[in-house]
Structure formats: structure tokens, C-alpha cells
Length: 265
Image (cartoon, rainbow, N blue to C red):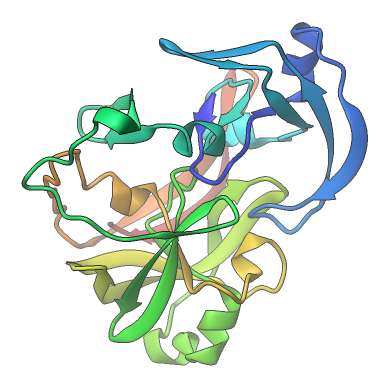
């Protein structure tokens, strides 16, 4: 299962059929991509994540299309908000460890930096700034990118004219297909009391999908989150540029889908 901060329990149709869960109803949903997808609901008896047990879980059932091939991993669905709102969730990216803690006995480490957040629906939102412009960031563990501005924020602050991105390319993939953006480098990104320098990000200019939401400024993903551990250890990678390419899994081979110059996060 992928771990997605704002995601609900979700299964692919193939996984639901294997588990004997029959989806009911039908509604349209949209994620990062521009395309709408059909969603049903299914009721399970027990969801186990490590030693944690959630009884009578409800799952969205949704076709994630090429996403497993884009990620290069086979998976059956998502877990996210149903865990995050019940437990203290500690993600140590350098150690590659996810820990679920009882909130009644949790005490933050003395050296930790606290960043207040509010919940917008299921998504944590924090206050900050991008190169001096006040911004509201959605915190998204399901995004591999570092920082992607939302379309309305990009247009309101004329960020294309400000940063002069040289090209547009596929910068992510989620429910509804690919997301396109323009790679840029932000000099300073402030997240609450934290200040990050030389952050590789991208500008989204479209008007469909979750990145077209006018209520938030940018989406904060794993490219930045992976710099932190539970004790607020900061890992700074040197800035630079590299030639990169994206590939998708196609059976037992890899298919080259794009060649691009990529800013290092």
C-alpha cells in the first residue's frame, strides 16, 4: 500500500476482487491528473498495518491505471488519513521507517521543530512563503516532487515571468493521469519557522486536477520531506542540474517516456 497523507483507504479493482470485496455505487473523482475516474465503495472486516488493527474499514475502489508502472512497484491501493487522524505518525525518511504511535503517550523530541497545521478536509495545510510571497502548503506524502505551485497561485503572482522556466514536462503522476509543470529553482522556501534554500520545484499552470485548487498555494511533497527525520535532522543536497529521463514499466521491460533537464532538489 502507498502511504498518502490526504488519501483515504483505497483499493484497486483487481485487489478488491481478489479480497472478495464488491464495490457499491459510482461517483466521479479527480486527483493530480486532469482526467476523472469512476469510484465505488467497499466494506471490509479488518485492515492491518503492522501491529495496528482497524476494524470495519471502508475502501474506495478506483482504477489507478498506469500508476504502478510509473512507480515501478506493484501495489494494491493506498492508506493515509484513516491512520493519520488516529495516531501520531512518525516518518523517518533517511531510515525508511514508518512508526505509528499512541497519541496519549506521545512527547515530541526536545530538538524537534513544531510547525502548526490545519486540516483542509483530509489534507494538512501549513503556512509559509516562497521567495518572500506568503503561501499555504498542502503536505502530501503521496507526491514524489519537492514543491509544485498551484495554477491560480502561479498566475496571480506571475511566476512564469518571474522565474522564466525553460520548458514544461511531466512532473508527477497520480489519480487521473500525469501532471505537467515547469521546473524552476526557488531561492528560499519558508515552512513555519524553517527556512530552506535552493529548492528545486515546478510551476503548474493548468486549470484541472487538485493542483488547480485556488485555496492553496503549493503542494509540498517527498522531495522536501525526505530531508527530515523524526529528530528534525536536516539533510541538504547540493544544488545543481542533471540530465534525467523518466521511464515506465511495460511488462518485463522499461519504456523511455521523456528526456529532460532536471533541477536537483
